Image (tube, rainbow over all chains, first blue to last red; front, side, top):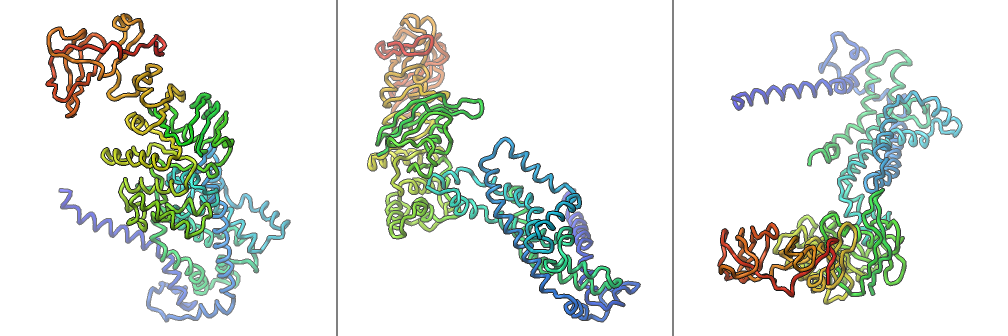
Length: 276
Length: 336
């Protein structure tokens, strides 16, 4: 009986999955479509789906009005820099938690994670003051450090999970073979954990790229990344949906492309250890 | 050189004392085997010598130098792990070369030594493979190769054969023994298998609950076990231990007789003890007869020649060789 129902059930789940997928993807699709419309078409009622005069005008205007490349460069520096810095700090931290755990290791991990439960705005004021004091406002260095700190718990957690899968005896063998801590991490641990480290890096580049709260609040001009670039189109001169959409498309395109090409790695990394 | 001396070495994990203060000397070139039931502290003791665990108290001397607080990398000891612990991302060549690279040796010398080790271990054809592409026995050889290229002061083996199947185990056992005869380097070998201990060791160290029950040559331990624990642990099948009236007759709390020191007769009244055969294990050359209902112990094991006809349910008569009886007092210590 169950077998007779199988094709029907399969068709149903496939349809459901597609519906869910399209629903999630729809806003992005709509943004991309809108970016190719004129401002009038963008707010047309009923909305125009595919049959409108396709134009690149919005992209030209956006590029003319603001220097996209500078925002892109800032985003790249902040996302790349914060991830690199975070991994450099998290690898030794995760190493010690995974291979020389103490009684408090679990507590420390939970405590680190708990900082992610704190509403960011709760510490905006103190961090803002610290930034003024240190002259870090609207600097790429300051933002890189803050974004790194925001994501550090996640980096440590992910690396800790991957490292736990590596048998401790192999690291002990390296120690017996004359490796000091640096060589042990560099020649043995890191190459073995490479798939995990790669997924961690990818996920954190994405998180850092999309981070909007701190980047919007702590930058103005010099260090402003793509989030600020989008935000600058959201209000000042009334609603220009087509231009806002063009700016958004330009801002998310790089990370979307990165995600597309690395999706295998991402999925593998995120399910690593879950299925043995 | 490779003389290892432990002075009052103690290990505690929290409140649990795994190794009470312990003294032991392993002479240069000696093949020492730590043997004992699981949880007796033999692996911990090896790891203390390796430097993978810190000692709680006491001193470890390697060639008269205090190595107590030396990191493992500086002790010049090589270790072979139970799980082989090969580097899965490196080829066999790079695995064997790793300790030499860490020592900063020049490339030509590394290659020469790797080739020599590979030739000695029949690994030449596998140098470019990854550990994952090798069989268990080959992996074990790579682990040994990685240990010997360094020409260490001493080799440490942590149950290296327990992941191999029985036939391979016997082969590797012989290879390791031969390697020791050839290199004459100190080796410390941990196992729970008393056959490995008996066949390989110059000196067996029997451990129980972190204490050394007895240390000595295999035959010393076999002939004159210092206490009941060693008597029961060394020898296969185990020594028969008998308490009660029969022991009292010999002026002891318990007596022990090895299976080969009992003669078996199928004739009525052909021995001083009598019982019924439970199982007779025919090994070809020998037969081990397990006898029940003797009134002395639950089972007595007797070794007889392979041709002896004996089956379940037969009544048999047993006679121990008087001069081969081991006597133990109430505390389990040997009475001379």
